[in-house]
Length: 416
Image (cartoon, rainbow, N blue to C red; front, side, top):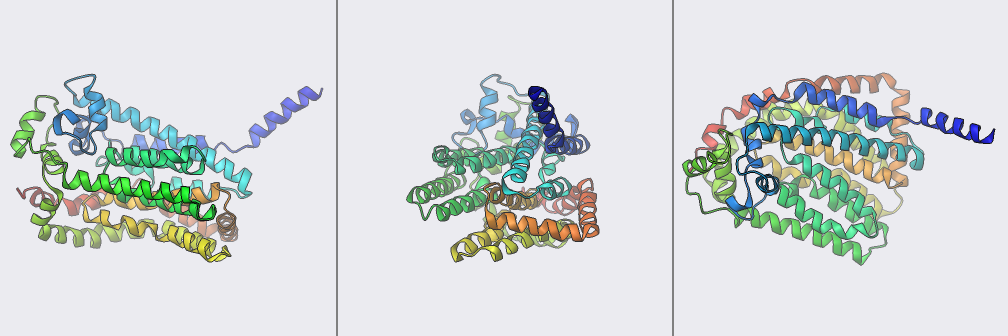
């Protein structure tokens, strides 16, 4: 009798336990099916990196995946690239769903505050991971950057695995040199938090310094010293790529990214850079401000409330550093991919919020409880926030971005 009751109780617990993973997976897979391009519209600027290897261009960033693929085949077709990207994207959706669902459930159990509000904001926000499925970003290595960042945040909390963080940071930069500005600030803040929490631990400080120094050193090396001198022109790159892939049109990107010094590239295109920067700021920037402003306002309110709850000045400074962390990512906006950088700002904030709450931080948990209490009293406001944000998820914000970019891209890439 007791055995039957215990089994029944377990079934009741399972029924009551929220299945966040299913809701997240359904919404992300719908966004994927709605946004992902077909093979005819695969972006050659992103897909070409699945072809390139270290044997072609030496030790440079963004060549890991291509090098692995080239171990198995000397010719990489568009169909193979499209299949690999699709498999990676679906696995990424599964990873995000399982990880976020597990974290949300643990927050509800351990921190004593429900995490539904965070899940809803994540699903509804137009600049969450869904940006990886649109025509311009399908196949971007940002996907691997996000996965590595989540894994490193888990490692930072572990006594033993924390020593893996410097090596994983190096791997992240090798996979994608933009990682230095995209998600390294998130890790730095998390490591600073652990340093403060453990009473200024020398071990934590050493890991922080090693991780940041190694990442910055690799970035400087890749963009200042590692460019290939084997290809003197775009025509040479095009001729070489023609023998290893049927991807058309990626030679310009490859030449300027891997065979041309970054400083020289921007120096020769300074005037063009200023023109498109301010044009993007006034058009795409304002559009994204109106689309994402309410969600970022929630993050600002969260960190201000958490900092107000903190009693120690040093802890308050760390929480305010979380709010200001996106400032470290601002140099990204000197590059043209603003439709990647804005989502990075959101995901960085979202990761930090989850990290502090999942770490059972009292001040962060109290801030989340305060937000939930506020939205419970103003349920209509929360409904408007969600509907307003969700209405932009399936909007064609990419057309706003392209309308500006198309005016300058030909001039910007015709500098040599």
